[in-house]
Length: 188
Ligand code: GLN
View (cartoon, rainbow, N blue to C red):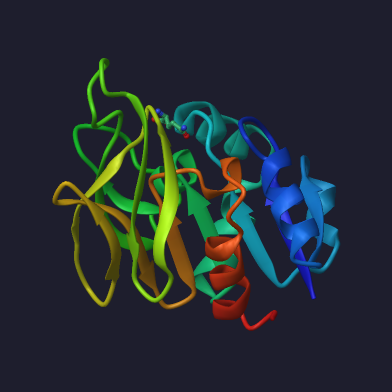
């Protein structure tokens, strides 16, 4: 069982460390030919969604990855990765658009752009959450389910085999969200 990590830009290396700790095999997707390798799940890291969206298109990765996700490939999007998966982005462009969530980018304003908290995540208890110029989810529709909220704002959700967090679980020691993803993907 192998996890692919999109490695065009942003905080992708840290996801690899988390998967190492959980004993999950992984590799990075940097270009089209990396898709020739078989994988069972995908991680879309944090970074800058506009840049990642542009690179996905330029490198011919956009359509094949979108197709795989639509066909049921388990996917975990953190922060910018969450934005890439959203069907609606408030006053902004959408990208892969596979998940029934409406998202607001840079939603915490400049002053509160980055912060840390420990909050309840459904089924996992209280976990550390690091937010960096984070989006939040304004609303979920369809059968998307809310997994965590901070100050009344949705910061984690799941729909089928798609998981998103507005925070960066890969930047803390706690591996529980990655473990949750691997279990959800049927890899552990
Ligand atoms: N602000 C970034 C964006 O809009 C997301 C920030 C992050 O991934 N840490 O894409």
